[in-house]
Image (cartoon, one colour):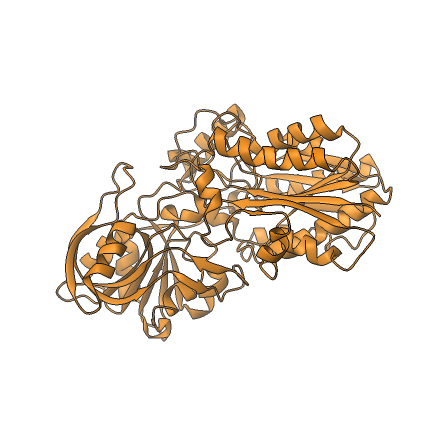
Length: 504
């Protein structure tokens, strides 16, 4: 038997975010489970669209590969992971490795864009600490998010890498299954040669949608899963709101010889270079988005994506510019979600159904130019924030996001509702609305704090999708991001592209 130690430690770090990820943030359940340890990793992730659940599912019936679960921890994207949180969770993994000296391999469910208070490359530092314990020969396979900022250290210290291939991320469990296949090959003595290449420019998050050109064509170039015994390739599109040296897209290839791996990686880089100008997206101002949505004539709702206040990219999810623009446009049959404001949610619960109250909604992050909306609100529905997600990306997961409320903005000539919650949660699943009794098909406008993930569950509802550029911490205009640590060559490409294209 070949024992495999498995663990997960996920965080996507927006270095421009308002709050840091503390250990308690990993302990709390939100869109994903709370911190899990030992056998709870099995039960707590079962049937959820997570890489570690896909890895477990792929090997659970194979008695030749007994699994030793250690920990699975995730926190909502934010600014830096505190050293305390990083060291405590890393220690859980390292201590378990020391207690199991007879393991044959390790699988790690990571993100790839973790930045800590002390390390730009959180995953690379974790791998370095693990290698100090197990040496350089033990096979270690990691799975990464499509938005990973991959470093040479990650590639050097891991034996194999598998990366999500969809954005929205509907293939997370599938990626874990691919990682299981890759690790089994390594455990059975197959040698893999690595090639790693970094793309010499950044790609803004809205342009990373794999269901649209040019990403759709780019991902079609990858080998289909791991059916080939000779080649495994994957692409990371990068996470640009991370001000680190290694931010940006990259490719990894694993082949039966070095030449094969090099050729595969070089071919993908050539595609990136040839289609650089196509990695673009049109954004409208919040005011233009609201006016365009109101003037649209169609049988289905218009979806407006508030892309820069996406909590899934580390934003506070409490900015109000888009909401204010909908009010100015006198929008009707409109709903916006999800504003993170535990104070207002608590006040709504205290006020009760059908009653009005005045409050300053949102704008509590302290970030500049992102103030609240002062208004009067009527309580239309209340929830404890515990409900089952129904979309493909959060499949199998249960929301635990604290007291929630559906509020109606009390204003003349408008019909606007707002969903308010007590924890940050990307608005990518219809259940956020429907569990409060909202019939989305009857809405004229659905405004969502999400960048691309919303497409997985909302695209089929929409006549038109508008990308709105309202204030937020998930900067989507690369030339406006105040980078300090980015590689000089990437800064040069941002400056040159902004001269001819203001939204690279």
